[in-house]
Image 1: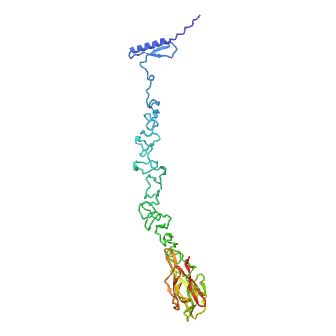
Image 2: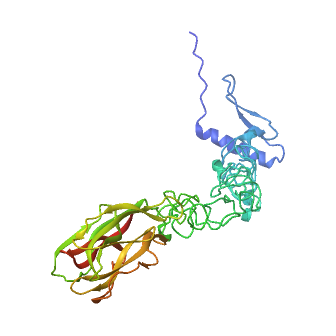
Image 3: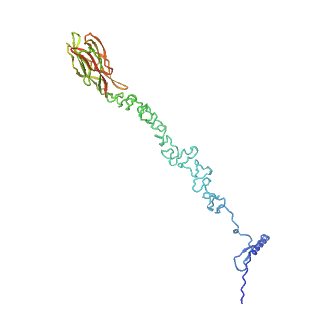
Length: 445
């Protein structure tokens, strides 16, 4: 019967350890001839063999950590191995590239390290300073005067060359009314780039004044940059102007003194003067001239034997303006009012000189009207600061008619600004008393 071959016994762990330790000791004693122990993977023969190695191989020695090995070691921010570099995202010192490190990294236009600054050639964002980046290059504006980024340009505070817009640069900037590329005055655009025209607030050549055309032509300076004056075509009430047609025609609607010119005369109201003579005798007649007419004289019959007046009637005329620059008043013909009284043998007439009207009377009277003196005056058109007015001129007394008996009748005149329009007569067979009624004289326009 064949016997089973015995299976080799596996050394125990303790025996193996003792062998390894004894070999290590022997290697140390042998100096350079160290004995090496190699664990064989073969299953034939003895499972443990020894091999003379001389020394340990490099593959059995651990590598030291180093920047550039591609491994992120302690103290490293990054390590891209052979991709590391001063121009890479991970520098040669295994630090992450950043603006301000003095290295021109990815996305950087420049990097001057601690010299980076928004006013320097390399900004704090590591970009090369350029006009239009919104950053002013240079301290105190010695390289760029301004930089408003996208707002730079023509007509802006900061132009496309990062220079401040200034008067005289030819670019019409904010606050400038004009810019002709120079700072000379008298060429239409002043040295301050203000339009050299009326309304700029500056008295330019050919201007008398300039208040900025404030819309008030009645102040010290008109919006035409002239002193206010009649004839400038502007109405200035403060100067007493009522109109201004800017022409030299005095008799048109606006005079040369800038007043509305009158179109005619008007008489209104009646103010009686006192009656002189026998105020209780006869019948009172108040004979009034027609509309638009005034007294220009009287006529009648004198009782020559006694010297008193036997009959009287009022004579009327029509005063009116004569067209023309002199604004004179002419008096045309008018009505003859009724004859009052009954007895007389000497006919007489007293009329004012041409262009004049009755403004008063004087004479003598007692029981009857003895003597009558008619007072006349021309009508004049005057023009003053307030406009036109009609006034009476130098007075004229007509020759007396009648006797010298009776009491003196003092000079009796219409009120100022009035002329006679009616005769007040008390009469029976003779003229007992006489007086006037006056109307206020005015101009129409």
